[in-house]
Image 1 (cartoon, rainbow, N blue to C red):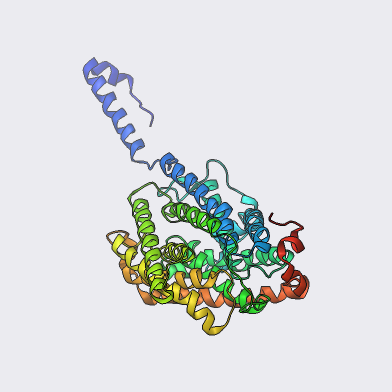
Image 2 (image 1 turned 90 degrees about the horizontal axis):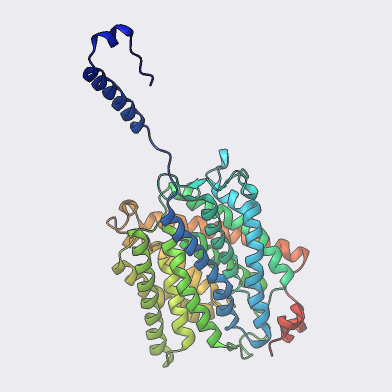
Length: 442
């Protein structure tokens, strides 16, 4: 604002009056400038927390999941199993950069209810000054994109637990690439990217629907389409090294704090609540699984307690930022009991070979957690919980299960028609380490 004064004014006004008038006009100008909203500034505290969370979530896949799964297969398939986790990490990273992130988190125009567009393919338009959630989280979009990348990495890696010891490596790569773009990215958009499930009020704080139900149901479809392992039911298929599995489960548990508390995208009280809920649910589920197994099988196993803890982590994932610790405790107990029955009883009743219980733990645990989020959501923890309902959560589960099952089956049959799904019977008996990779564990 320009200050203009006439010559007569100078002549008539004394020095004091002139100074007072000028100061008043400057104050008015400053006030006008202050009333204009300032551009959002980078929040360094939030950014630091999401950077750390990103590293924690990546650790969940490599080495966490790789060791967890690798320790539970037979010796002849250990290297092939850890290779699956590592290779999926590499492939999913590249595909997320090329198109996955854009399909999940950009505007899809007329199709935005179902899928994003390609405006952010190859991270186009993102710079070091581009903020995600400006005015709320105020973190660099690069940081958000790579944080979400780690979710895209672990989800298809989880599926591999259902078909462990019996899929060709070439088939794994082709299946993972197609599945990430056709199944994972759209469902992430439905819930988190402005799609129809998020708009309908479906609550999923950190991936109960997007990651665990999605991966678990896909794993079940894989197990059914591929069929059982050679010798299933008659050959000893005991885990090769449970110490590896315990180390892997422990890394998953620690990494899950980044998974759940990091999903707040801020270093605040809600992130703290999510962290507490994660710890409580995991511990409760581990004890619940152990107790049921102790009653039924007469001995508490190492494999049982670590599987129970993972089930609790899975189930609390959608609820972590919506429930109080008492709710998380209930979710953990329910997950430990129901996932034990699913992994041990349901699988044998229906006769499918879910090798490492990807569906029994992640699919069933994710469904339990999603439903109980609607029951236990506490608006004093998160105001979004005020309108939570089991019916809305069930609505989200139904659409996710339907799309995941149909699309996964279609992708599997397409892969089967091109490169084939399984190695030969003799190659499978000999082991995937030597037949697929030319290496063995000494």
